[in-house]
Length: 248
Image (tube, rainbow, N blue to C red; front, side, top):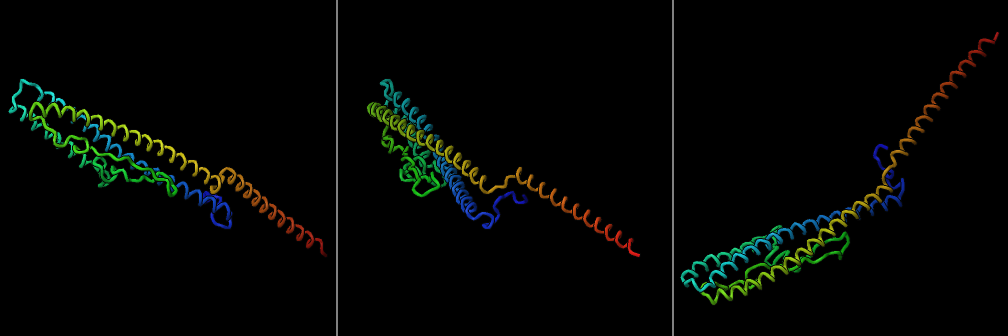
């Protein structure tokens, strides 16, 4: 009752103690795996944020390319438009290379985005899942070297941007699907941890209601025994005193 445990040492129930410790190990493993999956989910959230920003940048570049394609502009004017266009291309690389989780890349094809990162999503060995490869740099998207400095280059840039948007949409779908998978894995692992702890509790924890009943019964028996012993002593003393009084 004091510890709340039915098994406090091996002598109480050796087999039960072994089972309880094994279940505790499993529960801790499920919890650790759930933490791993949650961390990976946080990393994928950063990746999805970069992908969303990259989409906005590409749309801005497409607008500039369409503007530069217009025959009413001079090449001097297109050069000014191209300056902004090139800055946006640099922004693609800055955000892709700058996005990190625990110092590891999540959007430039390195670290967690390399395609080789393994997420330990199980309490047992061999239960890892592979994080997808994600590379949102301008080179990977086919945007490096594009320009809108001339009408012809602007037309080519439109095609490059459309291809980049298609590639980006594909990456977003892959990352989104993996993030959803991580969410399901996390829910499942937490459920497994809860159920395993409940099973352990059935073995190792004291039944407090039964324990309280047993304790009350034992206290009542002790009190009854004490009272009976006191009554016996009193009767015995009276008997002895009676016998003494009858002697001449």
